[in-house]
Length: 288
Length: 289
Image (tube, rainbow over the protein chains, first blue to last red):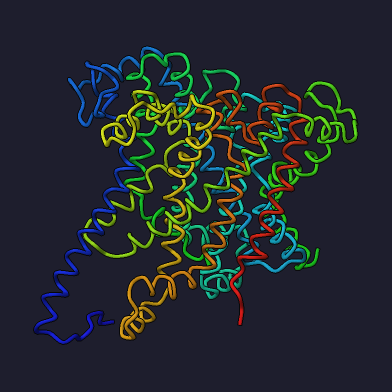
């Protein structure tokens, strides 16, 4: 659609342009001020982690690193077993993503494409989990996980979060969009439901699977309170928990703690920078 | 076996893993947790029924009352976060050069783990940290403020971190809401001589109402249940001034293994949350004509 409106040119044109310029400048000024508030704490941490000399806290606050170097990062590797923390974070994230994809897409398939008694009840039950006060679940889940002998294990960290209503709905929507003809043709050819799911549905739902992968990956990497409750031995901590171990025991080495913080967020911020569209396009259809 | 029975069986097999997990980790906690709230339970011995004892102790405990008050006070973040998020969404709802950079910048805290956010803000909040330095440099204050060491301020300092880390999330939700508002409505309003302020109040806000409702409920429930920031930044201190209700439950349950008391506290919380959600839907529902 044509967006420009036809306005009387001549005299008013210049005034409108001036107004527009002033508006634009103000707009960017506000945008930048707000960006400084959200980004500066990260910038300060990065600058501090890269500085190798001078005071940590300065007046006015530091904008650039002093004698930039990687000494603090090396110190982190010497102080705590960062490699093990990375390994734990990766194991937890990979298991969570794989499990979520399998569990959610399997549950979504019959909800999207099969008729069976009890379908609406199941759907309602899954919907209900969204309004249950899930944040208080960790107390009983800790008991359950301990009683099942899954305390201090990766399984204990990963299992409770696999079946999420959001993941199931995302996959359900994707499966519903697959053309009927394809499914009917497959059924006529004698394909089993599992074959239809595996060979037709999943390949065609690749964009949804990608979105679910990214969102789950970031959430799994970032989760803090649950792994900190389940994991008892420090050598099983993921980075998000291990970084606090560093800040607790070596709080006087602020530059080293800052370097640890950078090491924790760097991988996931890289993932975010390359997959922004999955986060920032909004949740199409989620808000109606 | 008939074809339809086979079909039904298959459907349930597909659903089985998800349903078992939801049963064990979403529904079981509600039922078993409610039961445990009326017992004494320490993870080792079998639960012992004690009736309303946990609740009596709970409401006799000044710390719990203070925690409840703090959780209620925490609701102050809701209007702040919603107004700022709507402002952000309106500001980035365009195709100006560089706008994608700004959107990403506002979203950065959302994809950062809360533990690192706590560490970073502990740096920002120290006496000679960046926040005091900036305020002194702007001549707003002369003496550094003990953001996390002054028991009158600490809770608000933690609340600010909650706002800071949630803004981007709500911005994206509002952005989606704004993008579903048809452009020609605005164009018609411009032709009718409505200024930007009028367009915002007469068009944007009414059309955003469903999103505002959803986001307010989400952020209210999140605010009332907030405790991760507390656990990382202040551990409830100074002088227990930043205890929230769920942090109280966490301390009694996970730390002291007094699950009866902890689950009684979280049951009180859950009732509080349900009431809040109900109030919202009752009074914020867009009026139908």
